[in-house]
Length: 125
Image (cartoon, rainbow, N blue to C red; front, top):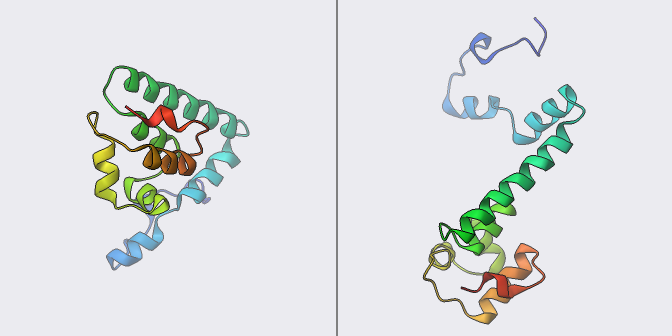
């Protein structure tokens, strides 16, 4: 049986949960596998990310999420990761992602810098 034909069901069961976690492929492993199987994978993946961002912006226009949440998701950051990079606590990011949140200009500038945005004003309500 080639490694490609091997399935999770055919592997021996790990003895402990830690062994099970260690046996799981990483995201990098999965991406490498997809790239090896499809030379156009990177182009398709990039197109899918652009489509996801457009969907997020549509949700912003409909008032379902804030622009801050959309930009955080675009950057593939959790609230905790964004908070750490900005020097805030995660509950503050959660609060700022609420539709009725008030954000100072200084906070918007710090968030925009971390999110790679040219204009901090798009984060303001």
